[in-house]
Image 1 (cartoon, rainbow, N blue to C red):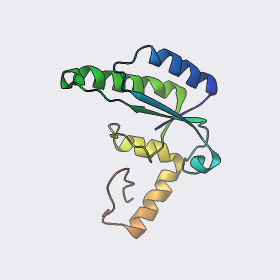
Image 2: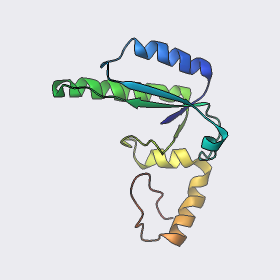
Image 3: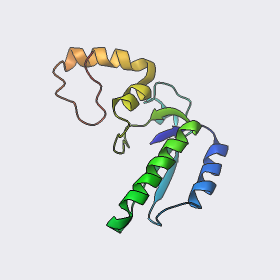
Length: 132
């Protein structure tokens, strides 16, 4: 889920994007952010989180739908603080850069902790913080 800033942004986003959906099976999930959710972010500026769940039935539409989803996701970054909420990681196509960006100033400290408790990086799946 991408962290979004501003109610007006969310409203405009939903109006524009629903007029351009590639598949009627796409789910756009916008979640208001609470204090408990914000505790997981390094910078607590998000007001909403966005998840784009693209689904379609025909394999012949793969290229078109994947392109639409990636383009839409990338376009939303201008309305975002650039962080992702990793309980809904998607495919992490942005790679390790997304992990570092999302943990922000806390990443280096978390990497040192990881080095102390998991120096061999045995717990390396999903949104991995690499040992320092």
